[in-house]
Length: 95
Image 1: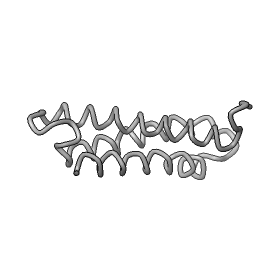
Image 2: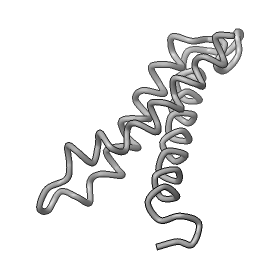
Image 3: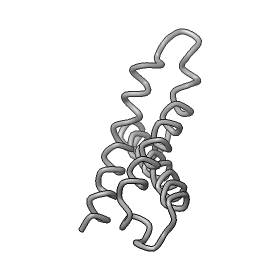
Image 4: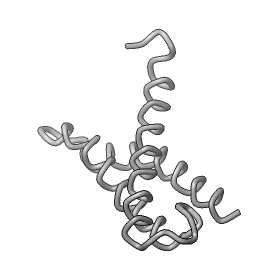
């Protein structure tokens, strides 16, 4: 159950991280930082969730492995958020 909860937290954070990053970096000359800020923020959030939730990776995993895999899952959740917002804004026909 903690593994499912951790994945759910990361998925919700990944979806919400794009509008938060866009709100912060939506200015003249800084709009190119929206995606890097979102991916970096989700890597940090994923690393924190991976560090405090050992079942996310496996009970026998070392601390470094939990942090690294948590960061990867966080970046994956961020990419799911990007794809979701692309589809919501543009539909399946594309831009």
